[in-house]
Image (cartoon, rainbow, N blue to C red; front, side, top):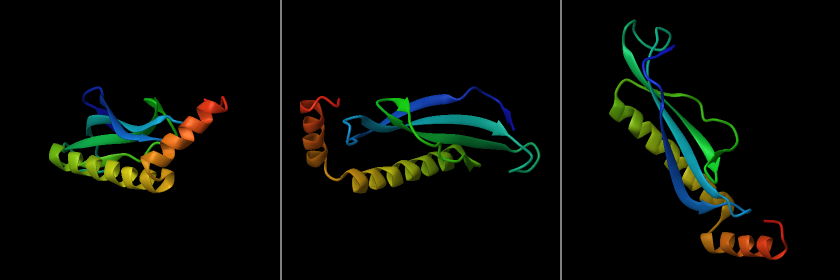
Length: 112
């Protein structure tokens, strides 16, 4: 795969906090890539990675590369991945009120 441009990086804040009070979000890197492996020779694919973050720093495993033949198609894939993550984190960490209470407890006992 040959990158035609350097990745454009975007930070997305999900407006949620984990049990330690860290902001949950994603770092999105968009690439314009040309490859003969996933496309017809000479066809340009739009490629992105969606990396989970905590307090704006990379956290955990990277989500596999996403490919689309159009920029609009890639944006739809990115939006779907972010929404899936939002639902997963909301289920895992519960309501924001519960997280705020947990964060206050951690601060009170000196863990954060």
